Length: 635
Ligand code: WT7
Image 1 (tube, rainbow, N blue to C red):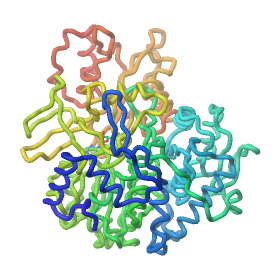
Image 2 (tube, rainbow, N blue to C red; image 1 turned 30 degrees about the vertical axis):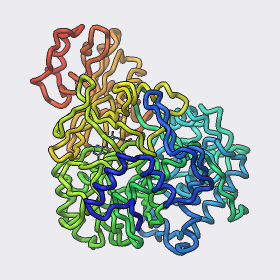
Image 3 (cartoon, protein in one colour; image 1 turned 135 degrees about the vertical axis):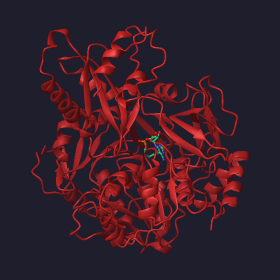
Image 4 (cartoon, helix red, strand yellow; image 1 turned 180 degrees about the vertical axis):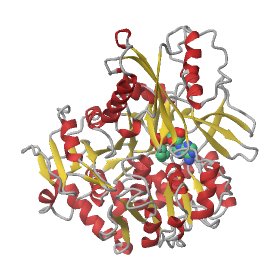
């Protein structure tokens, strides 16, 4: 019913044009008509992309939880806000109404306050996909604390790096987390991490798996005991539109992960806008995004976008393979899911299985399908369309990033004509462009280049926590005045975009964004290793796999290669988590380098992918002779 949510393609085109010609009017009209503000803004947008500095709705005050919860209570208090599907399908699912959500979030917020949490404090959430995670995210927002959710698959080293980077005062975790047949010992991992984190004062522990845990009295508190006496009322802290809402880490091309900062006002406005437009959510739809809240997809499209739109959002604790590969379809049947949003890596894995897993379930409730996280190949797109959508559900291939906060390029379901592997058109408010090698914008409609965005949108990340210079260097320096995404893209004659993949040192493995430098740093720590170069190469299900090229210290060249290989794999797996483990390790006597000493990963990428005919000119290398050896010993 809002004129800002397109009903057909011509409305989309009109909205798009309006958003580009008069962006401030466009966003100020949408923001003022669709949300609860405690105070209006003084200026809609102030920006300078060379700094970069961007502020939306400056001077306005709000609390995002009033928009996600309180405002729905009067008419929709009894509507289900969250459906919780537990790991074990024999356990009862939960249906949490908006009214109950209000109570739980307020109690959680009061619990945090009772431990001494204040506005502006950073709170790390290292938790399984249970409703308490969503309550805790919203409770932080309620009291103006800044949440930093760390995916519960990360190792203790990754966790301690993230806790320290943001100086988190509190850590919220659980005794354990169920993931299929396994239990992840979250509290033990957190204990290990916190040994390296002097900033942590208190740890709240949710009982989930009844696992044996260590206890540090004075520091550790049981969730159920601490929350028991808390009031069901908690006033929503007044936040400025540009106050930090959360920090979320993403891998970069140097070792240290980047803490992307999102702010309250713009993020709220854009996640709501994009959720409603892309998924065309209708009042009684059941919407399921299969991501984990530990990633931006979960933040924006399990929690904030859907709840601010008053939707019913499903949270799934488990994995697609447990108890068998039919689990997704069982969940769809059980909860009559209408909108399913998942990742290409999951689609490829499910497409490998016997089709009876899909056909044994009644998935006829599905109306709209979505995908996100990496380029989706044609076969996977078509399998999704044929067997899940039965050629009856529009597929939205949504391109965006942790940094963008919300979906940037995507069809609007049932509105934008889809083409397999194309993310198609930018959302209203988003101004993408392609840049060529010389840094000039590709002016023809049809073209190819590096994908940039030339005008701010409300949910653009504002900085990297504690390192604004790195923010500028990474995103705003390659093409001055533009936000550089790190992706390459093609554009067809009708203006449809197709994302071709990363052009920097980030590799996406099973939908997880991995920085190759981070993996290299860990391999380098092995005493026998001189130097490592890590690249990605195509893998049929995971999208990409990790290939490491490693040189060995002169004194240790005789060391058994099989032992060394498994030691390196274990080291990476223990330090960064199993996802980062190299699938292939090739030992070499040298790595190709430029004369300034930079490893030529471009060549190694081609070797790993088996593209052995087109290295380009390698004569300018410092050590061209090593390339032949590397090619010969390729795995
Ligand atoms: C990178 C961002 C945004 C939520 C999940 C990932 C790749 C994402 C698509 C898509 C092609 C995609 C890009 C992007 N990516 N969606 N639909 N088609 N590539 O967030 O971890 O910040 O990763 O994921 O390479 O830059 P992220």
